[in-house]
Image (cartoon, rainbow, N blue to C red; front, side, top):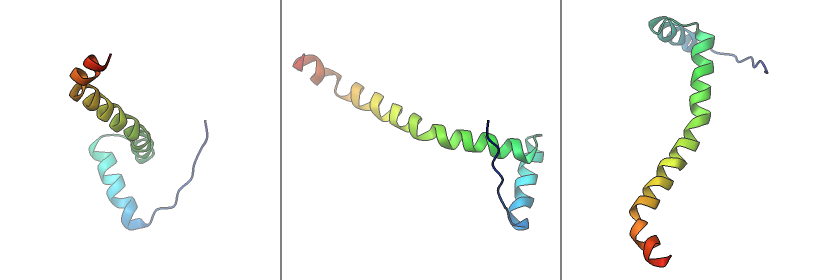
Length: 65
């Protein structure tokens, strides 16, 4: 596992701490989870688009088979 250090202005850090407090987690944990979700999102978007196209064109694919 790799550690990344980021710099945040005080005006960005304060809301981050408030949100983390609301969810009862440390700010670092909130950032880690947010990054993981961000990295996972394109995969989920692609999967949803693929499922939509396959469902929409299922009859066409059946006829072409």
